[in-house]
Length: 259
Image (cartoon, rainbow, N blue to C red):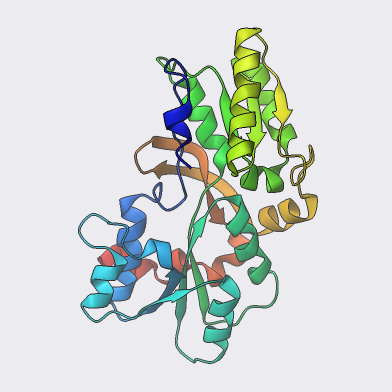
């Protein structure tokens, strides 16, 4: 919206941790490309196609003849798998919001030939890494409203207490962003550190408890690398052992090891 051009010169807004596409690490892309090159059918969201791995993107693999198809919802992956006898691999990406949808599908008796290669991420863990960096000069955090609809804004209270920096949850419209920045600046000036919910039309303190239950019945947090940031402790969402039958890293472990 061109907001940066209208901000005061001494107000610096740093972007991060970024979108789930840009933080998907190259080895995660490489694993998916390797499965595609070995003839497996890959389904993923369109914004993942051109993200580079160590050498190739999924779009490069598709251009070379691999079967990589774009879908718009994980439910399409279920439909495609049900209509086929061959293995179908869904390359699952996104933060808490899309991870809930992947989890819901795996809780709904998915076809046995549907496998999930998870690159889902857990946002609060990345915030912790940024705040704990010794030379960080960040004075306040604008938390993403879409992720907070799932987690709730209460999840940031221990973060604020630990690091002494304010967090404001905001939406994505221009006025949402500007109001969030104003609320942060006011706290910095007044030397306050509180969690403020500026996106109350969508976000509550508790979040979506049903969605969180679904999410953590299927996934558990694990350590992982986020592209352009660092290794993030508990920053990845990996499938629990109970769902190993649909875990592409388990089913195709030999293929991935040989890649």
